[in-house]
Length: 111
Image (cartoon, rainbow, N blue to C red; front, top):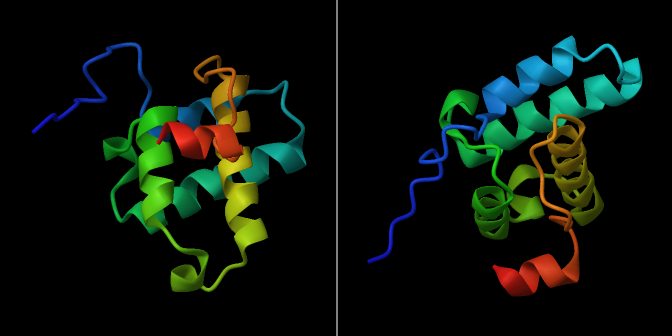
């Protein structure tokens, strides 16, 4: 069994830390900031873990999003894509995201 500790990298943020940074980022448009914060809150709710326990890691989140079906949360597939995109935007805005996209077909093949 291969278990990866996503917090083994001390530079890795949790979703809670990412949320705090987004909240404090005065360079972000207020609407975009609210949307990113909402996406972080929604992701924590869907993953059923406190945001402090969820690494802001594309690898970790990609795996979690593959386990989530939009119908289970009464949202459309498009809403799910928007959530993924907003999480990635939040990560990029704080310098903690890869160059690829959580919503891309390539990303799903990597999972």
